[in-house]
Amino acid sequence: MLPHEMLQTQTQVERSLLSRVMGWLALSLALTTGGIYLWIAGVVPQNIPWLLYFIVAIGLIFGIQAATNSKNQSLAVGLFGLFSVIEGLFIAPIVAYYLHAAPDAVGSALLGTVGIFLVAAAVVYLTSINMAAWGKYLLGALLVGIVISFATLIFHFPISNLALSLFLGVVFVGLTFFDFWRVKAERAGDNNALLLALSLYLDFINLFLILLRIFGRRD
Image (tube, rainbow, N blue to C red; front, side):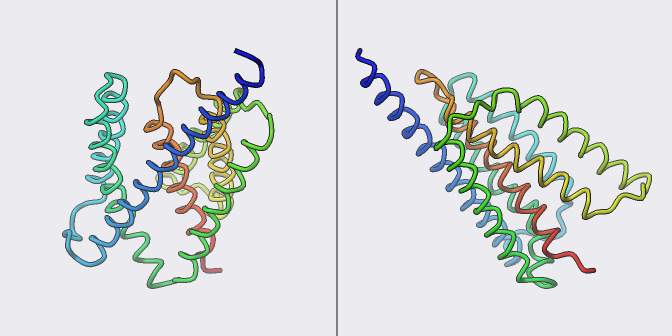
């Protein structure tokens, strides 16, 4: 195969994988929106503990990974769809609160998240930056942020909520860039579109919630 043909093939693979990943991402966000609507509309009981949704969501993430690794695509897709709805039910009380207390913050957070995703995708696909080394540092920073969050909640450490939100926001912006780079760097023989979409979905939801907290805060 000639060099220019190899380049064209690689470009086609990247575009094909990106389109599949973004398709799964769009579907998952639509299902999450549906879950939020079901909770707000009272179709789903609103007295179900949030911890139950959280535990189910974590279990579904492991289930999606296991189904994908075992090449059971149908099961993985079904679990992914269920996870997206459960996640919507999980975050629905937060969204409902801000829709009542600070409705402008919801729109600002959504636009901000979409903007970050567009910038991240553009930078990754229009440049040749190698982000392979980012993963371990971002994961470490995320773990630090989680530990600090729990420590602040339990031990009431004097840490500003805004500072913590900004820190986690930077981490998830970095993860968004890194996950788009993972999509671009995926090899032609791999078929991890669903797992890549799951990673980007988690980036999107967490960024949205962080921006919602920042834009909706009351001084």
